[in-house]
Length: 168
Image 1: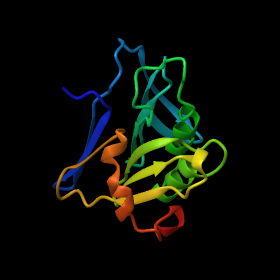
Image 2: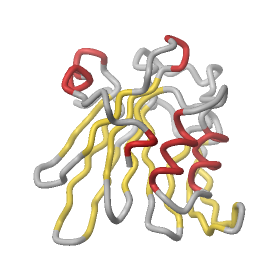
Image 3: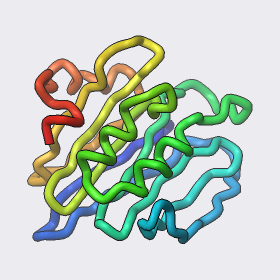
């Protein structure tokens, strides 16, 4: 049985597939939203209890978030990532999406899969540690699977340190 939030990415032909399960032990109150943000059409869902957000925009950029809270459900510890993800989804390029996600005091905390027509990446960011975010390009030839369990985060050691939001 999978007890952690797990996401996966694979490229099939010229299409990209992002799948995700959730590790919550409660029946979530999910709401779906379709709106314009800063002139960009976005479609997203939000777990109203945890404030977790995943979505896609009209420019073909999608984001899937995995919390780094891998213990038990702590609904009282809501994600502070919703605003960051929604601001990121309003951007037109993957470079701008990544920059929005990893910079500033409202940067996301956890793991984020970001996929666009020309590039897909996995980002691990923990602004509390004052570390530079780890960004890994995903080629999509094989399944890329990631989870929020710490013992499964060894990919960070192989990340190219030259990659950042400016490197795209």
